[in-house]
Length: 452
Image (cartoon, rainbow, N blue to C red; front, side, top):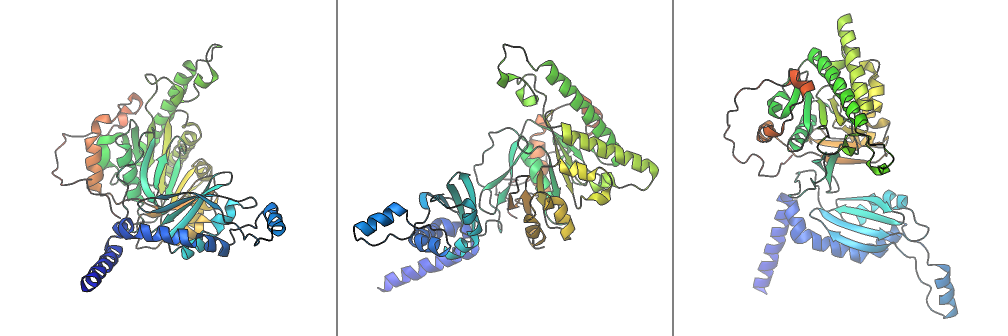
């Protein structure tokens, strides 16, 4: 008994230490078993207490009365599958007749408390089938990206981790243009850095506009096809992009293949419908601080400003089919920046809001697509840089956090993939002038998972 007691004390102490210092390890060793037992044992009573049960069907009630058997009780949604993940549990539920997916979503907070989980989110997979994702610990406290992520789809890169443990991808073909807002030291630059590092290995041209004299993007210049560090150069660069877009459309028109013997599915309407040997390289345009492009003090600067905003609006409206995608970042993005700004914002489908200084800034990012996400955005604490609220035009939103990537890590990644940088003739005047690459000794650049 003495040795058994000592072993039990050691196991409990090890579990407590792991839960404090390494919650992910604790979940995989102890937490997953305890949580699965807790969910399966409590499932029926918890669903009944949360109002997620329905009465037995009439034929069963009638059968019970005719056979003098006990009246069957209410029925909870049927569990189709239980899957264990590295961050929690995933339950797939089949709803009973009369139940609604909204009822399950409204009960997520009560389910979290009843099952003693850190977080519970739900989504409807198809009619009558709901997926509950339960997290066993705070996955955003110490961001650990999975070792294996899906990078097979073109123009789709992992950039952050969601609060339910899933990977947040930036899919340019699904959401062509995006807006990222955040106050100083909110993690907006790290998010952008992760995006550049993820795109560096893709067959894509990167174009940067950094009016802070290039301090954010110019260290990554070896992977950029064009860079501008002041509003004057930015205006010329945007005009060149518009001209390039028009040339791409002429190429699509020439290769549309609309003859009668061509199937409808093969008629080209954008660059992704073209044969691979004819397809122009897609372009991602990153604007580091959009306010610097919209502010003006003189008449000449106002003319330049109108020229820039007009070019951005044209790229946002027409650029998707030509393979031009916008990533616009800033601290504020409202009507006070002048005419054309709200029209441009309406074209930016993807929205990401880091910690902001006031509620109106959160409204600028999320108020017109997911009003209930505004409150979550203004509640982001100052001691959690990198935490952000992301939403899209469907009204859905999620809390995410990008892994911390230092500037040195991002520079080394861009230098490693510098050979993939496309040379676009239309943007040749804006190609950054670079000297001879000097190797920089750096231990373990990205071997360790990024931590925020």
